[in-house]
Amino acid sequence: MSGSIERQAHPVLVTGGAGYIGSHAVLALRDAGYPVAVIDNLSTGFRFAVPDDVPFFEGDIENAELLAQIFAVQGTRAVMHFAGSIVVPESVENPLKYYHNNTAKSRALIEAVVAAGVPHFIFSSTAATYGVPSVERVAEDCPQVPINPYGWSKLMTERMLADTAFAHELNYCALRYFNVAGADPEGRSGQSTAGATHLIKVAVEAALGKREHVAVFGTDYDTPDGTGVRDYIHVSDLAAAHVHALEALIAEPERSLQMNCGYGRGFSVMEVLDAVDRLTNRPIERRLEPRRAGDPACLVSDNARILDTLPWRPRHDDLETIVRHAMAWEERLSAIRAEAAKAA
View 1 (cartoon, one colour):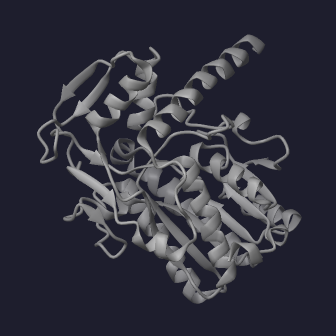
View 2 (view 1 turned 120 degrees about the vertical axis):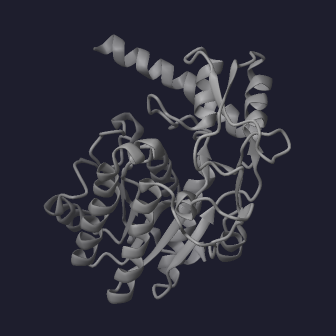
């Protein structure tokens, strides 16, 4: 399928392309030969995450005039939509922020896409749309019953896309991520957000002395070591899935897709921390805390659909590889920030 795609004829606009996952998607698209541009308001993204040869537009996806200009100049044929807010506890404390950033702004973006006749849309969705599943391996047909505003804000966008695809000449793919981690193997991008809550990012920061400890929330789950089990996917494998999904949409313009992005197996919190300890030979202080409300004991993807639908195959599905790449990026990030401080 991918060999028949005329990539130069399908320019892609990446929203939130200066952020963690979006910047890796930009690299994957660029490496695959797609013309790519980025729009990002830099509220959480970083200008340095976008390669110098990629057109960059600082602005908001609610700005219909700016979007229309970009679509016209670029000849956009597809949008990959990553822009939004992603911190689950914050969504509980400030739900209207999430319904604005993730739902209302997505509606504005979809409206602009339809107005410009852009035919393909890839959406950054989440396993949070499943809520607390009753099964250990979650398939796409499991009930979607979110337990927080973040999950609902994403599910609402999935619904908008489904309805819009029915009414207009648009097909879409919603990719539901499990736990994204790691960094570009070539050191071109990584997780750069200060105060990030992702376990591997937190553990790597602790190993490098940027945090004093790692909190372990819940040690009495019905899992082999009592801590929560999650499906960790390398961010570069996830970015590659987006490229394959785009090519599936181009090849079959009448078809839309909803797919999980994960490896289909999980690691516990303690297993992740043990992996970091092995790689650094500097044991991390672990502080045992009570369970957090709504955290399932185990959340692992059933990834049969994506493997059956796309030619995507993971290249970095090894926990120590994911941790090693995250560690290398964290060290590089320290150098980037030191240089920026010196320049200021």
